[in-house]
Image 1 (tube, rainbow, N blue to C red):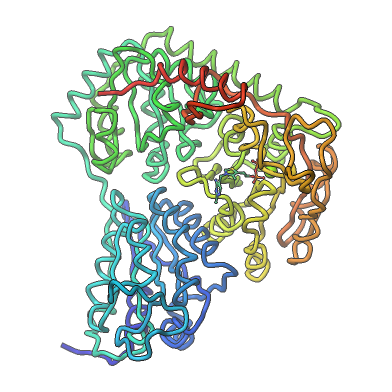
Image 2: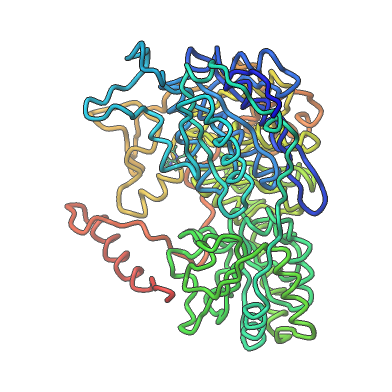
Length: 626
Ligand SMILES: Cc1ncc(C[n+]2csc(CCOP(=O)(O)OP(=O)(O)O)c2C)c(N)n1
Ligand SMILES: [Mg+2]
């Protein structure tokens, strides 16, 4: 066996650079580069390997470790999980800054490879700078906090272990049912230690992404159940898009007339103007989808993990006889709601089901009802896009302006606050990759960093990041990276002086917006929504902040100015931030839906008691699907 003498870090980078995936005969290099922030825990190991062989892997400098994992998640999602980024950090705080990003990737089932530095395996200089010492246990480090948020975790205690660890990492990253954050904690001394690496380890390796099919028997049974249904509904989740099953879905829908509702990750599965498209479902759903869901006797979930936002906390499916068929690559998700399991690839399964349903169609009335609801919903979107709200515009008008300024293949990115719900309802999506709202973890701060990852994966597309002032304040640092790399983002910063979403929730729970506005403390209080003469707003100028990071900033006071600004932004080569203030109270309503947020059972406040009474009666509709 021929070997080559390399450090463990050099071996790992050499290996990663030569990993490929192949699906449907198309081959791609798996890793698009390595994000990192260097410190003593990774500079001499991974840092040296990247320094010495830049042709193997491009190094991207991040500003914040959490943000770089978000960028990696955005990248992986945009690549339909057929591509990923590596993230390297020092030990201690640099490493644990990635834990939130790891959770986000794992919750959203997106592949990211994390290489946090770790304390000395030899333990010679213990405690090294930034080392956590646990008096009760000798073999832990802060990196153990990655275990619950990783789909695979290993610590490379000895250089030879890198061979097995690397192969296992690739197995999980490329497995469509298992993928998520993969963490290889890498002690700083081991990174720099040499080993004799078998040359075969560094050879090109292609990981085939299969399209497994369920057995014929359950497929036939599922087809029979669909034929017997009086009012079926498809709920399209992220799996439809990752599997590139949108054409197969459209064929299936045109053939059978089964209408389609979409989850956040599944939005874009059908173009918004398809007559069978009911749009968003659940808590942030349209009346179109929620009405049909309420009546459906058979729900076909495709690539969805059935979060509470999709099921409206298990109140969306009201038909007492409703049953589920779940098409999912992951058995875990297919089994939810006591569903009839079709474990397999979404595209392959839909194509096979369509064959088995040859000649079948839902009743004309069912098809027509969906088409009518699609039209009625579109009229509601028109209304909300053009409210003419004054003196400050409504957020729905901002969304309308961005939607009409963007092209069909541009991408909108968002994650937390009141915008994801509004976008889910209102965004007119024309392309399967045009809608990118991270709502598995709904992590404030994902927006700009995730948008950067999207742009890295699809530089040919324009990327519109919609970000609230709260999220912006939490994590906007990757504006700098976007400028450094010439990766243009068009960022629309929607300012309502605090947390509108949680303010809205607060009012609905009887809490009067407590703790959700950015105002000075006065008489011991940070202000309430019912204050008639509130304390002044904090003098935060986020537009100036964006300017100071190097972005071109356009301040917009009206929707007309925003439209003009968006036109100007198209002509710019670099990152643009359009800052606009909106009315905190001009919300998009919710449509025939409910979300379970528990309210205090005993309280001194009348409004809380009233909200509790309402909550108890609403909760009565919550059901188990068994
Ligand atoms: C990291 C993180 N912390 C807290 C939350 C809870 N949360 C959800 S939305 C929100 C407020 C977001 O404020 P902003 O970005 O201004 O959007 P707005 O609600 O005003 O639309 C908070 C605190 C979260 N989703 N993520
Ligand atoms: Mg806000």
